[in-house]
Length: 383
Image (cartoon, rainbow, N blue to C red; front, side, top):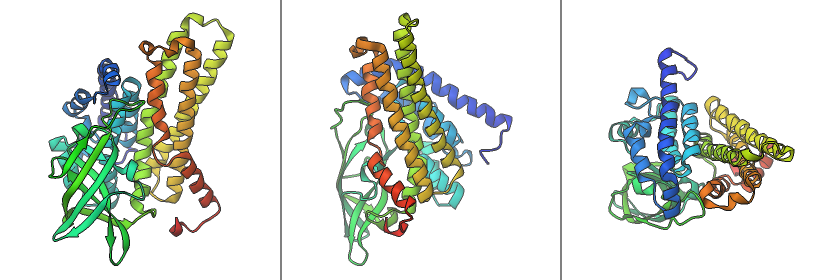
């Protein structure tokens, strides 16, 4: 069913997802401070996402899921980001691992329906290592009879304590092809898989972004879904860029919105101060910039096909959202004044949480380099 159709049923379903996110967000907000202060994973919140069906919201209705549109999933993450940054960010990592195979099922007739049906029926939580692996990947794959033994450490694995299935990769030194990245999924309860609790971070402290350690984990040949040259752009990474990045950055726009609202609430007693009005106007300009850049990313993802031009558009938007979101929270701190330094007022936490916007791929230097190479017409096969 096309996203352009607007039957009453679909309109009602859209309203339901967003209303559900708003309702859950208000519940999650009460646990947000506790998770931040204690480095606790937001396990109860992820359990609520499971019990309410949001874990499978992105799975097509035909495969037993909620059938939420891509734009609605972005909106859900943005709403959750206003209330609990950590829950929203951890959920975005699962969400993009659902929407990528959904896109492939809808556009390529790819045989991924088994995975998507399992997400819907078993409420599986998928764990991504793609942000820290990217084009190079890491870890080693050693060929053995019937498959490979994988040894690797996957960092920044957001949502690890609640995950059922790790979607990851490792490098195989193929005697014929050279360094080859293998992509596969590993059950989190497989022999040799462990979580090392390393996540003691500046912000986003409740995401449970621990290290996942793979020690001689057996992956059968049949579980390898993709083989690609190490360090080179491949279709799958254009697809990941197109689908994943707008979802993740929807969270940060939600965090920026929360900072804006909190700053105005704190500064309301000084609402007759003309200079303060000027500063708030500047903050709203930055927030509008972030929203417009995010909307461009979402529209591009919905209407485009994976490829260098689409990746360029998405990653340019990612840089613009990051800059604007950081500026929003900086201005919010200035507007609130010295009181923003107190943890109890909440802005200090949002300031720390928004810093994560800097670190997802492609970071600005790499994005600008890619944009420049494309502008000069470089041979994309060399990138």
